[in-house]
Image 1 (spheres, rainbow, N blue to C red):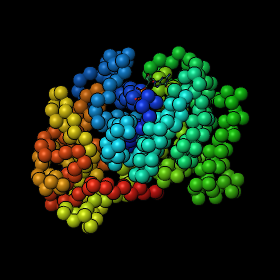
Image 2: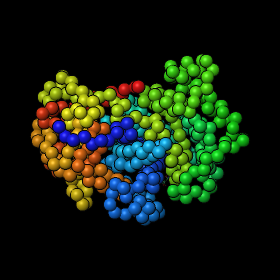
Image 3: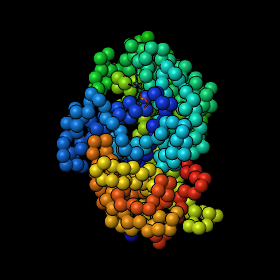
Image 4: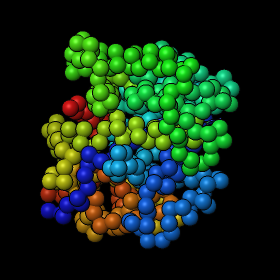
Length: 419
Ligand code: GDP
């Protein structure tokens, strides 16, 4: 059996960012990579330039995301988390590709344009995500634009998507005067200065006097909505007990993982007001690979016999090739989500759809600015692999002594486990 990787899966998030075209998916992703790049001391893991060098170069034009999956790091309460962002095509023409990406991610951020609200493509992708039971959080973007209306967008999440939104923040100011957000869990105002530049952190201050009543009311609604969907909090609610910040967060996480509620955040990716709290929310509320109890596949040549693989390095290796790209320097790269076991560079695996052996060449973790070669990758993680000759998108790779086929014509939905 291959050596373990030592990765703590509970600190990994595999997410997609979904949006109607022009809502700000690219900008939001770029900002995420920017902020995570700033916080991540790349020198510790990589050789080469310090983070700030490339950040400075890239600042003006933004970071271009060319990879099918990109890895970044974000600390929450001083604990570093790994976020793998899987590219989710926004266009309905790529429905099969969207479905395939939904298959390999564990949670998603849906970005809405604060002016246009819920648009047709967001509806389409939302329903696809519903079908796969993908837990989602929402980001109402572009609140700096003329005509932006956070509350209208929240209403549209109800009427157009039939979802139950959980309003986690209120905007401070509007349009050109949009200044920041109120964190309704902690009852703090997070404000940027009016001319906030890329990279600036927000200041945490008391909630402005004129917004206090609205914030208290919104917080009460948040706790009530949560309680209605959560037995633990309901008991407390009925006894008139105020839940703590930790209890509210745990409740939001349970409701999100169970796809009962969808937490809603807001801001502007354009001027960077709101993306840092959104990163915190990704870590706090979206699932880790461990929250998916097992992935189901079937025996080779026998679609009736179901085989389940747990997200553990102790299980035999199984993974799904979800995207093939041509890298200008490396040539053909196959992006693989590992579901179970460990995949090692230089090893041999079985393409269980074609019943053909494949040799794994080098394995890379793709960061926004560079690739990192690694020896092995474990369950729950996403990497790019060189050397695969016969594998195409959607095919399963497996331990040749324990073959399994993860994807057939109709993909089995992942089983979401609610703690
Ligand atoms: P995508 O098609 O969803 O990837 O959208 P983009 O990220 O490419 O954004 C579409 C356009 O909206 C671009 O011109 C962005 O500069 C702009 N944009 C993105 N986010 C914001 C925002 O928060 N505020 C404003 N005013 N414009 C934004």
